[in-house]
Length: 116
Image (tube, rainbow, N blue to C red; front, side):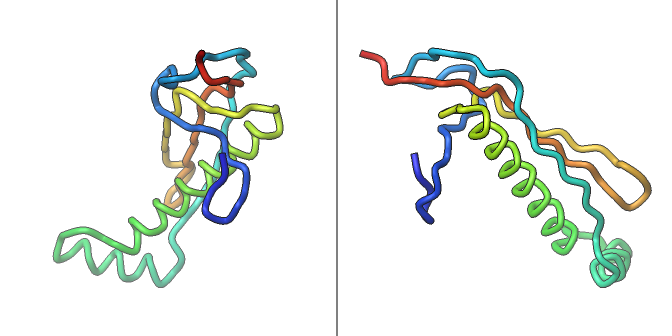
């Protein structure tokens, strides 16, 4: 499978199987890990936004970029193992230290082939 830029990308799912395919080999857990903190501008704007309430888009942007980066790292790890699919994908996040959060994306790397 290829993305819009022509890069090879494994089939990915949060499910434990892929309809129309069967798993031929399990290669193990793959993961991507990122630790991010908002920059000073995002922190100031975020602090001001907490006074009036509502969505803090600058923080949401930091979180989304961290999730994407962790996901891409997981895909790279899967490809390095020879996988053509990743199943049971999950995300986890925790505060690493005050103001910095860890984002973990993980799943099971597998090889699959189309079912007959």
